[in-house]
Image 1: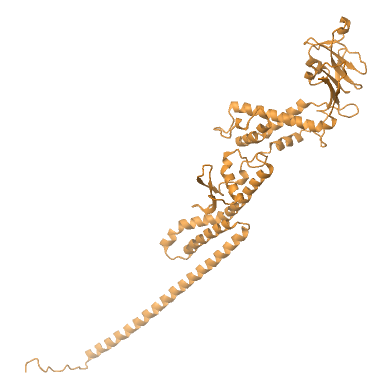
Image 2: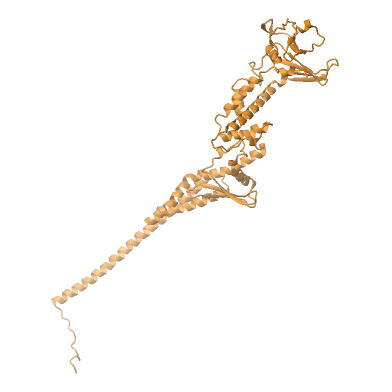
Length: 477
């Protein structure tokens, strides 16, 4: 058998060194066991902490979700009356934004939190303005419906209705038609929230060429209270006139513009005309109409001092030009590089406004004096068929007698063109010669001694002398 056959068994002998190794081995085993226990304990504690954190995050998320739901509910309560489309647009944007807000509040990842900041900024803006803007958008549809209703009820161009001449109102009125007329084929209206977080109404309509067009109305940029409406010019003028005292509270004219006789009654004048064999007698109240017209002109110009160029043009197109036969709405335009009329446009504007205000004054005078107006027409006497005009004025007329100004308090005064054919030179000398070669006679029932030497050589001058008006009515026809 070789040397390697049947080796001796290993013998373990307990020595002091062996005991040390045995003790060390036992200690190592114990330490390893303790380490395993400690790690398990650490892992359990870490897991518990993470679970607690996750649980806390979950609770926070749930709390934020509940908070968001309550906030949404409260906001919608404040915005009662929203139509469904506005409401759904708000709910969608709020819910999406609240998710971003919740993630930003609960994330433990700094990179994620940083990446959420632009969306969070948008949502914060939305929260700050959306309530008002969505409500404004809803109010838009209501106001636009009112615009259409006003125009349909009162008619276009009426004061305080939307100015349909103004191109800046075109989209608004298209939107109003969609809002009030319902959505027809090719039309649509949706509410969107733009990149800034502003509520925007987007309208689609079919134009005159049959093509589809889309435009936006931003509730943050368009104030319906500033939409160009036709100014109530007449009311502004009448308001100023009311402060002048021209017209009394009962509608009559102040004596400073319409004199009274000695009995405190309105002074009247009567004009008799022979026209085509008819004797026409018209009685009217004596009024300083030209003075009243001047007051209206001043009031009308002052009423425009604080108006914009567009408002002045709006008045022209909707109020002034339609009332005057010599002017057209197209004579003036809204476009202006300087925000003012050109020199030529200003002349047109001033002339038209002056004519309009003059007519306003005359109509007001006519309304105030209608009770003193009377007109009769009868067949003229056969012996008096030549067309002519006489004027009879009641007491209170001033005239010059023997070079002195007097006021007649009784009777009536008549100024008459006299046919001198067949009259003697002596009789003609008693008449008042006029520049047109004719002669006039002033008669008064009190048979005052009138002097022909009045230094009056024109018909206008004669009427001025005797305080009369409308000298053209004296011209023989």
